Image 1 (spheres, rainbow, N blue to C red):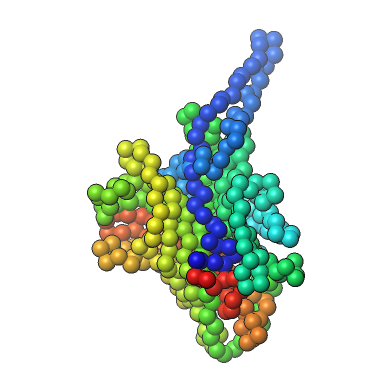
Image 2: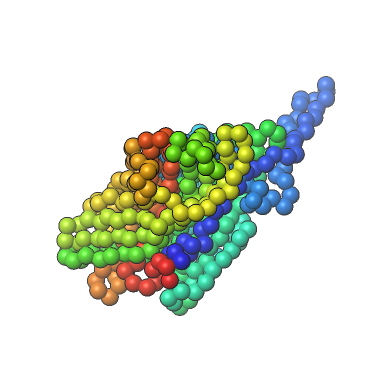
Length: 372
């Protein structure tokens, strides 16, 4: 079982805003025409009603997010089409409930709150820490947001917490027929008190950080998949989770690692318009390239490789970044490291895959060791 920030709880959240309802109009010859009211979202809307409205656009935006360098404050990595870039993602965490506010460069913000927007909740208690994950859904007249967020916290110290997640946001004519998406945004974040400030790093030695990674996955399938349930030109979006292993070399001032044993789950649209639900192991691994760190922060490059010799990666790129904890583990090493990552790959057969997510790992058992 993959763990870490409740990463195993970040399940597939992807499913399509189906249109229904519509606005009205009004006015008379004596008065100016009234603006039609915003279309009303369907009642009892569920996550299963929310699917990739425009998988092609989500794939494009995810590819931009994958190569976007993480920004600090919290760690946030995102991209958008026709929306202003995300500038910050601030988290408020209070005794097992959390809210994240994404602020764009134009000053507008989007807030997701586990107390108001949760449609699925799961949790547990591992290695002395509470863990909880939420699937979130927020809709309005012209927008819809789905997100997977999770956090862990100490029952003895409410200031000892870390949280992260991913979001997917749409605007447009979402509740009318035909549905029209005018903009889309995808991003990942991680935050917590011990990621603030500058940690005191050792000058020698190494440390290994084990944990997990999770986020959104988007793909277009190429010639390698002819004759399968996902024929060429099938496009889909979903979720992924994998095992994280990072090695920090404090003598050389570098950190590197990879995400492997990746599992994916999502809904896919074939060229004929059929929808297919599929989940299983991915043939990809996400390699977090060696990079230096300054003041406990780092950014670097990502490559995505294939574990299947029949599927050759022709090109790959991406970015990752994170922070070390300001609290040590008793051996003078930061006790955890967390951040965001994105990677994309194109195969010789024309398949495209994109990963955008967050990661966390620890030197000891803080609920962050995979396969517990």
